[in-house]
Image (cartoon, rainbow, N blue to C red; front, side, top):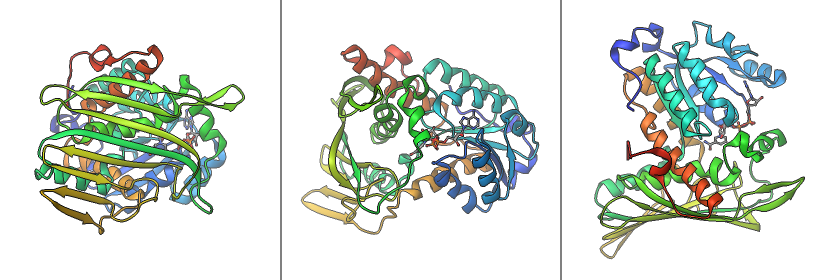
Length: 382
Ligand SMILES: NC(=O)c1ccc[n+]([C@@H]2O[C@H](COP(=O)([O-])OP(=O)(O)OC[C@H]3O[C@@H](n4cnc5c(N)ncnc54)[C@H](O)[C@@H]3O)[C@@H](O)[C@H]2O)c1
């Protein structure tokens, strides 16, 4: 399963694409406030349409972006001005919307998690391959500047061979005067695993952490074990926290990773966005990297610390606002279309992370260790 575009097929897409990417956004909800940043900032891109079932939201976004408003996706897809489609809807819609967009010959970017199952993901990839247009899975932690710097340090040999990746996510309550208002309807669909695809924390948010788990080690994740507790929140609903998920990577030397998700109910989380404090430790044969910041702002400075050979390097001048990761993830999609190159994450990479995320859900449900290959088949990408 490779990248779904090529010079030959590009002729089928509106030629305007080579100068300016004109996007239609499907779903103008909470995260559109960050997904819009790259589209508005890039000189070769333009938001030309919004499609949202919610009339008020649709009209508000159309006024904000100066674009057309569509209630029906099919109508937006038949608009020849739309070169690319960005899907920002609840997860259970992603597959069918992406397939429809590919059938209309559009480039497609779908917010994480791309689909709720590998079977539906593979149908999307099949449609992408037939269309010959760009398919990107949108995961922004991959573009967060401190994470990018950490990967650069790894590539420069700064830790030797990576042996372990440990991620900690702290949940709690928003500090006074902090963070975003999340509309109740944006939480409601996430609380239903049949719409979300898994738990609101360990699958929805988890996709980021599983991507981080794959970001610093260039071999596939092999086995996953997940303890996932639940907290009742009333009306028969529960949130999937706390959790401890661990995994091993293929091959030798032995390498492993973990994601520790802790709900500290009375911990004030300082954040401009969600109530989430994600941090990271990468250990190698001769060095260590700590990344102290992501969505939340608990330990802002230095955002990255590197230890090797008795020397501590602290990085203070890295862009740290979480929104920068969205800008750069969107720029990646635009660049993939304009430069006719694969995006990060392409079809194969997105599948590997989805399989990892689903393996963790299965492990918790069945109370056993799960081999990723049980779900994904033999490894297809790192
Ligand atoms: N990368 C991140 O950090 C991040 C953060 C939040 C959300 N997300 C992802 O973005 C997506 C959207 O999340 P959100 O928080 O903005 O959700 P939301 O509920 O706030 O917004 C969803 C929007 O989609 C619209 N919608 C629903 N069904 C539709 C349909 N069939 N056709 C057209 N419009 C439809 C709704 O009216 C709403 O405006 C999800 O995939 C989510 O996982 C990613």
